[in-house]
Length: 547
Image 1 (cartoon, rainbow, N blue to C red):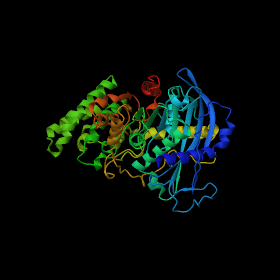
Image 2: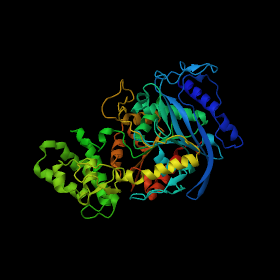
Image 3: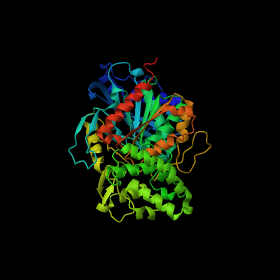
Image 4: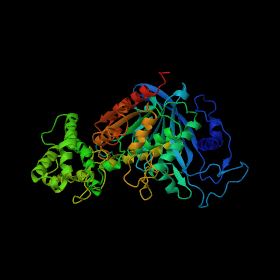
């Protein structure tokens, strides 16, 4: 059935994009659509769209000419039956407004193809942000697209007009790029019966992305290209489930998976760990980020000179003395409790009385609220280098994220302008950078080999492990920011070192860390490092020069 779905989707795309293709027929660099014939789909809510343009970007001194395609592909929920939805091409489509029509999603993407050369064997990377409920405007306009919006480094960016510049660190020098918006976000849309249930969940979301990837490979004849996934934040669990689905269920091996700001086991989240008493690991893996943040804001007694040796010291303490103390629970002696609290004060700068009152356990929101509370200043969550005025000095936890408040307008405004003026897409549509999916989102996840979806905290470590064992050549690049309190960098390190894989496969995983936050690329020096590390990773793993 999976082959049939791909063929049907490809046929619709060919038919509806015929005019656009004809206009650009003179260009030999136009990615060739796959030729196919199949019945029309009955009762479709959406039709694929496509708008092509050209441009060039200078990446670290080298000019790359490219063709950009902004468009949509149509995907369906897991139980969709392509046979029962097909009809003769001459028949009229059924009434798509009926409530019993199956759910479908129109997934928006912007693809950048380097002009010239052999596109069939050029690497291609699918990129997505997370949320869940976030579009991919952040990676597109801040990290690897050909244009980059300029924002202040660790303070609030001034209001419009914003500056959109050539991105010296676009990843187009190493790979063709496909920025994908999750169903319902950006210009992506969902419709049909139980549409939220069909797409808003760990497994449902990954299925939609798997359908998109295979349809895209067919649409642009890229099945034989070296393939990569790049996921940020919730995009990291999505990438883990997705690559396992693509490899084990759809027979599509990938060369590599690139993870930025990772969380695979939600039991390790420092957002609200107090709701899971008896599991103290979240406090332990977050402690190095607390220390890095205190260091950045000059709250650490003694003012250590260098960040990296300091956080390595804290990592050791977190996994030894601190972990043992928390493990003792109520049997911890007062003297031992006071000694651990004193050490936490030395590493975090938080008041000793506060640490003791918190029973040695401080959540992320509490840390953000209290680190600079003496000046009514709230510390950032996504990037703790950022600070902002405290909304309510008496709140237990931070009421907002200063980093998100500082840069979001620049990203969203710049993309809305760019999409319509340069990409020629979305003139009469609303771009939704983020949507609230949590009222519907299912965190239940059926791990590989399990008979049912587990109802507890999501943990997709088995999925990434399964993909690595199924394809022992799959390479992983983990990137993290020292100042990320949404997904602390040491949390990702811990997860990778506890994957259920043979020891020899640990050598397939690489680690890179930056003096930045969740959106590593918000700090220009870190963006350059990120680009260089990812480009090098792709060039070393694309297999093109090896054959």
